[in-house]
View 1 (cartoon, rainbow, N blue to C red):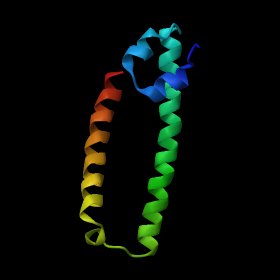
View 2 (view 1 turned 135 degrees about the vertical axis):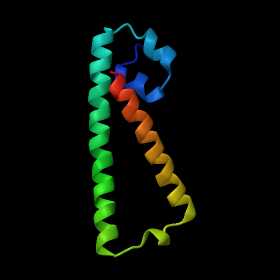
View 3 (view 1 turned 180 degrees about the vertical axis):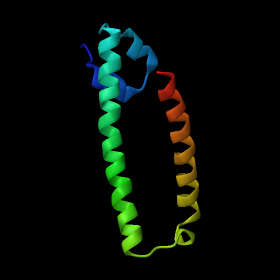
Length: 88
């Protein structure tokens, strides 16, 4: 059974992605479109939580240690992602 591009991207296997017979430009364009849509969802989540944090007057020190660590790692990943996007 032939997999569509969305299924291949969800598997995150480069081997499967590369083996997909679709046009390379089409794959890249669809992938960028998917990323854009996911970023909109992420922005919405972040903005809602920033609003909640502000409304409840939460202090950053009240976060659990694991939450602070995750936020730090997310920041690092976003910097790496930004650098890769600039390479496009």
